[in-house]
Length: 149
Image (cartoon, rainbow, N blue to C red; front, top):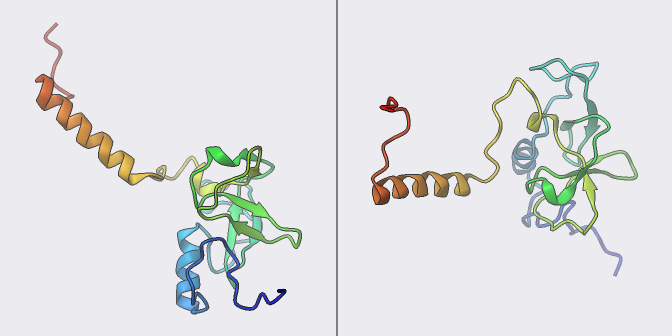
């Protein structure tokens, strides 16, 4: 009891994550940047002001949407951030949020100048497959054909 030297700093973190390259990969996967974003903390794409927080990954920072708390169950996994009592941003990874829990979201999810991320690519692939299947099954024309009306 009380020995925390071997515990991970995030839920479901793979064992042996002390390797710097692995930590850097996880940081980038979660949307954290390195080196520190410019002062003042503005998005490099839309130039809107953000709130910058250090992450648990040495040398990596995250720009979060300012003053916005979102119900955690509405945010895709690995995009849920909380601010710890030390002022560090921590990603909740795939942890199931508690009922009523809130979190912060990275600005990259809401940046007006970036293409939206596909948070569930397997659902997008399934949707495209079902679209093709329904067109074959019901003989529907492809989208984009002229209206014969």
